[in-house]
Image 1 (cartoon, rainbow, N blue to C red):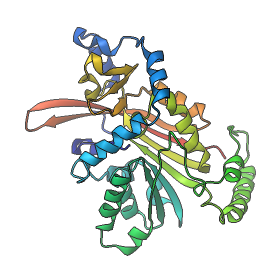
Image 2 (tube, one colour; image 1 turned 90 degrees about the vertical axis):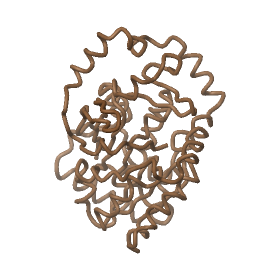
Image 3 (cartoon, rainbow, N blue to C red; image 1 turned 90 degrees about the horizontal axis):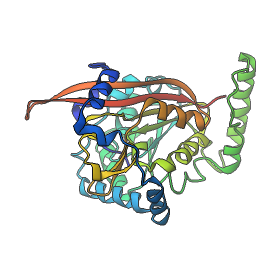
Image 4 (cartoon, rainbow, N blue to C red; image 1 turned 180 degrees about the vertical axis):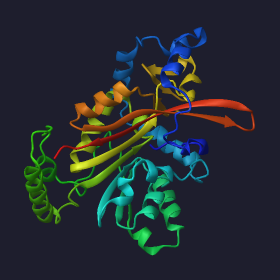
Length: 326
């Protein structure tokens, strides 16, 4: 379900303008008021989604089929700078990339750290083949050996048992434990390592990191809590989830017409793919509600210029880093 990001987006933490100033400008513009109104047909839309649970996945499969050449995507090298844990992690670390697309996120991570193994999933079998070709085109044998793509629609079916078995998922508490001492945490780590050695025969024993890069916005809003809890269940205690997605009042949101709204801050493109635009409060509520601790959360506001048209574009993304409690 991963959606591309234009080349202008690579300067990640830039603060070219203040989000609050943009918010005020949008709210003062009468031509944009339809983006701010309540969505009264949400209940009817939810009923339609229940009747057609595969509709969203099918739309993304067709999207990837149209863009299977890979020219629509750009390698996301900025992730190594913005999430340095992906570079500094230890030997045999495991990353789950959710909504991998053509491998534009996986490849720079594999290049940047020879110790990391990437398990990459997507709902489109065709785009997974493109990802294999994309990574396979790099003439580094060890890199290809550390890339493990697999088919999965995580918001519908959940992750496979080989990634984390039932006993593995149930062994981790769902509550935060801020009262633990340093010695408590070390003992938990020791027990987790012992548990991992026992579980290795039936699953890989959960992952150290998860990336949700322009993926959650493609999931129907009512399915997001379940999708995030699924991510939580396959992450090791102390593991990190890295998040980046479309922010509220991003330029692409303002281009949607009123008839393309399918929910509050949720839109449907003409090809059937959807996009949700996140506020910081929405992201916080979703991840904390699933049991995560917040490490970092902010708007990233970048002003870029379309050289061909000579137009300035105000892009808004949400950057987040969340940790599963020990």
